[in-house]
Length: 272
Image (cartoon, helix red, strand yellow):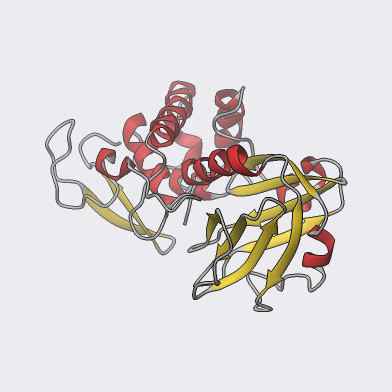
């Protein structure tokens, strides 16, 4: 699933090419995604202009004029592909948005776990899905908020980081990487972390995410940006996907364990 760096990479690419463009018309496949796409979505989007594109957690937000927020989530396998000129929809394409300059934006999603919805609200903070999200790990004041939330939580820290209501945008890859950088075992109970460890974890999250952003995200299976280019961060991962390989810090073998049906990768010597 695309996480914060991958979604932000897509947002930055689309921001350069689609800001100020008017939506001419929309084709929909009629297939449901995570939930059914409103049948009148195309009519409601048509004629509106893209005023701003931004990210919140793992969501892409297209702020429109006349006022509205078009929300897109890529789910497990979704892609947004910008075409400079019209092209026939490829397999698993569920939406084609045509713009007044002749370009198109194709939404492809083989597993159909994504989401596409339009809200007639003036601000993104009025969208229900966005209101339910926790703070952005790249925002201000995250260390203090993280420390207070951890002290009231008896879950394991890995599950906490994956809960979008706690902190928005973190998925399996960057949770593993940040915990390694912070020297925290993924099975540690949240309420056992000290204030110093919480600060170290907040800094680790920011560092890991900023590095991944600098490399345009991680492509381990099917992630590509809006221009079809894969991310370059895969070779910089310290623990994720490296079971049995040597830790680059202490040379112990990287281990893997299952937590909540997901694989957690960690160094049994560095992370306590």
